[in-house]
Structures are given as structure tokens and as C-alpha cells.
Image 1 (cartoon, rainbow, N blue to C red):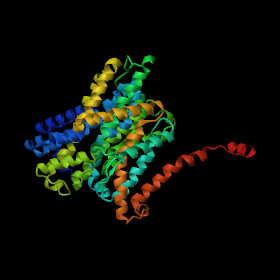
Image 2: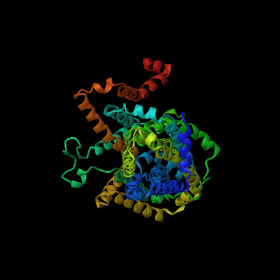
Image 3: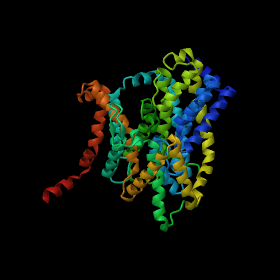
Image 4: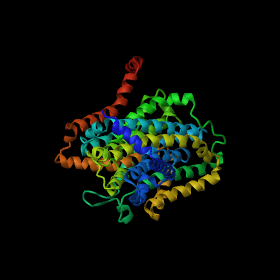
Length: 502
């Protein structure tokens, strides 16, 4: 492999102008990640006109920095306020917020920063070395494969909750049902809209996440005020201890691999990777009941995976000209604005753009680590604010975040509705996470499954005859029956004897 283009790419990114735009990108990314509702996609869309007056390399470096910088910024609100601004941050809420309530917010944010850096760096190395190979493999994924992956993701949801698995499955089914609300993309028919033009457009992720995680938590804490529920007065060490790093290192390693592989896949790569990484750690754990109660691995795994996925999603864009998600579609547009066509010829026709952007991610990840770890102490000060002050501020951030997505008051109404629903779910022992994650995966499952049926002429057997989708469905079957097999294996011989005697 000729490394001279790679070295030339470092020369490009180390130019003062490009370094400045890299720094601007990651700072903006962190800030918009902290503001729930805005998101990297909306920010990049807003800034696209600005890229007209910037050189192509500088423009794409800045936009890329916004994208992967936002992944860590979203962690801050997930840990401190229980507000996931992005779907990929939902899983971090479970253990991140629990650690914050124990006075270990610094540990959670520190582990997230380190995991994000390692996951992103591993993914960049993979992007540099095996981008063409991985991108070629991604071409083999069609609607049947995405349908199978989505179903596997929904099945994994049942293993991430703290409580009753049946309740997690019920919540996931409700999420799948909510995903069907709106106009059918295939036939144009309206489903569960009850004549409402607002519902005809479907329900957005932001109002659901803001209501179920943000508003519901405030309502629940208001009811518990008589129990003197306060944020911890003293926050522990903002640097992860050696023990914490020891617990997290395996999760970070596995999360890096999972995120890199799943991030290449169009549609929900970061969501699937964070979910799969969390589920894997919980299944491997000797004490799975720790998850949801403040397990360090529960923060390290999803944060590493979603950052690795954010980086590897550039592979199909840069090497094949195929956007892996909505944000990558905006990056695709930004390249076209600059007169550059993403695809197989990019690396030969515009090596400065290709290697400049790839190598800028090494620098951007270092900048994020350098900025985020020292600022953890600033972030955790939020926990020292009295609940009487924090609650209205959180409500304001929640409602503002929901409103800014589409500038519609109707979204504020949806936040309130889902806030009440989340409060009731919490009261009756239902986890909101499975509902939100199933909602995100629901649209992908429906559209991919219906496209697959069209490909196979209505014969569902085709899903099982294709090599990749057949393999994924075999994994679905294994995941579904494994708890029964494990239960049968763990039954002691004496138990069987006692059953026969009785």
C-alpha cells in the first residue's frame, strides 16, 4: 500500500486554515450536541450556504467535525439531564444518568470521552486501511438484509431493559405501532392520523425522546419531592479511576469493532451499533443486573460504538458515493456544491479532499479528547443546581429543542403527550428506551420488508434464501431461543429428580 497519499493528506490537514476549520467544526458539534433537538443534520443543513465561500477541503473538514463532534456532545445531556438529543444516545441514558445520580457524572463523561476517542480512532484506521473492501461488502446489502437487521435490533431491545422482559417487549410493540403513524410511503394512504394533517407527516423522533426521557423524569421527580430527591451535593473525581478503566476496556474494544462494521450500513447504523454493543455487554456480564443501575460498561460500549459508527459511515460516501444516513446525504450535497463527485474516482481525482478529510478525523478526535476531559468538571456543576431551578430550565430546553426542529407548536404538544406517557410508564415499571428504539427501527423494518416482498414477488421465503439475510435471521432465531436453551442447561439434575418425585 502506497502511504505517500496518506502522508500528503496529513500535510493538507495540518495547514493552519484547515486546522482552524477542524477546530471550529468539533466545537460547533459539541455545542449542538449539548442542545437537544438541533442535531448535526439540521446544523449542517443551516451551514451549507456558508460552504460556497470556503475551499472544498476546509468545508468538508468542518462539516465532518460537526458530525462526529455532536456524538459526544449528545452524551453530556444524556448523562446529566436524561435527555438524548440523538437516537444513538438513547442507550447511554440507562447507565449514564444512573451514574450521575450516584455522584459519578464525571466518571460517566470521562469514560464516554475516552471511549469516543478510541472508537473513533479505531474506525478511522479501519477507514484508511480497508475502506474499499468494507464498502464493497456493503453493496451486498439490500432491503431483505436491512429488514433482517432491523428485526434483530428489535429483538435485542428486550435484553437492554432493567425490568420485566415482557414489559420491554410490550413497550417495543408500542414503538413499532407509533412508527406506522402517518402517510404510507408506498400507497399514500393515511394511517392512524384521525384526519390530522400534522399526524399525516408522521411523528418525529425528537418529541418522543424529549417527552419520554426529559419531561417524564421531571413529572416523576415532582411527585417524589416529599422524599427530598435532590442531585448529589458532591460530585466525585472527574477522571475515571484505574478500576473504572479496567471495567471499561473490554467494552470499548468490542464497541469499536461493532460500531465500525454496523456504521457502514445505511439507515440506523449508529443506533443499531450502540444497541448491539450494549446488549452484548449485558449478555456477557457476570452480573447483568448492574446494567441500568450505573454500570461503567453500559456507558463505554454504546458511546464507543456510536462514535465508531459515525466515522465509518464516511466509507460508503467517499468510496462509493452512497450516503449511509441523512447527515451523510447532506455531506454528499456539500461535496457536489464544491464540484466534487463522491465515488470510486474520488481518491484518485481529488486525493487532497479524500485524505484531507480522513486524516482530519485523527486531529479532530484528539481535539475532542483534549477539550472534553478538562471540561467534565464544568459539565458536572449542573448537578449542583437545586431541583427547583433545574426542573424549569430542563423543561425550557426540552420544549425549545422540540420546537426548533420544525418550528411547529404541535411538536410541543407531542412532547407533553409523550411526557405524560413516559411518566405513566415509569409508574407502572415500563422502560421508555425499548419504545424509542423500536420506533427508530420500525420505519426501516417496514419499508425494507415491503421492498423485499416486492423483489421476491410476495414470497417471504426469499428472505431466508439470500446468504446475508438468511444468516441474520438465523441469528434472530438463536437470540430468540437462547434464553430457553440457557435455562434448560442451568437446570440441575436434582431439580429434575424432584419434579419426578412430586
